[in-house]
Image 1: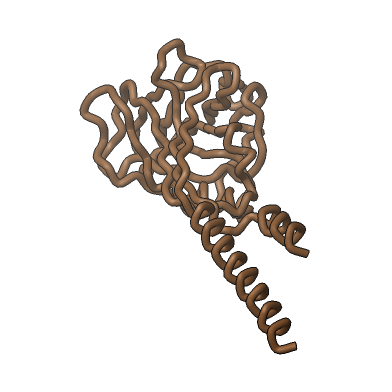
Image 2: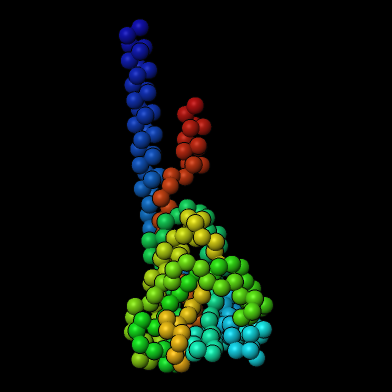
Length: 228
């Protein structure tokens, strides 16, 4: 009787140790950082500018090869960018460790630093129908790019959008993309960037580093099924 009880206890201990080891392995594997890089072309890319000038406030610029941000007291231009390839990760519960939105600056007079900011779009929009008058607008606090204005043509890497992407992953925010604007919208500043519709390779891109923080329920379920 004593021996039988001891054997059962040993089996229980072995099984418990196995489950604990598996849990640690799965959790460690889930926490391994992963990287994504999106830079879609015209077929998949979704971006457009909107213009408040009366002659253009109902005009769609979804097929423009450039994105603009411009501001005076009489006229504004904002640009929308959404990465559709990110959609499978939205509401996943993954943790975004770092995200960088990169735009290729072509020309303009951006104004003094800080000169560029990014908001979350407040609602859905379509590339081939969005205009100034039907745009969803912005929501939340902006991500303000702290870097100086460009001195020459090249990439502007906006690495303050991590909180936005993390909110999309957690499901806290709806995923409707970014709205790019000037910080100072009272003077005649402006900038031009290439869009996903340009023929060059310098299209908008989004880099994301994330990790899976939760243990996969299916993995634990499979183990339980084996050791019933």
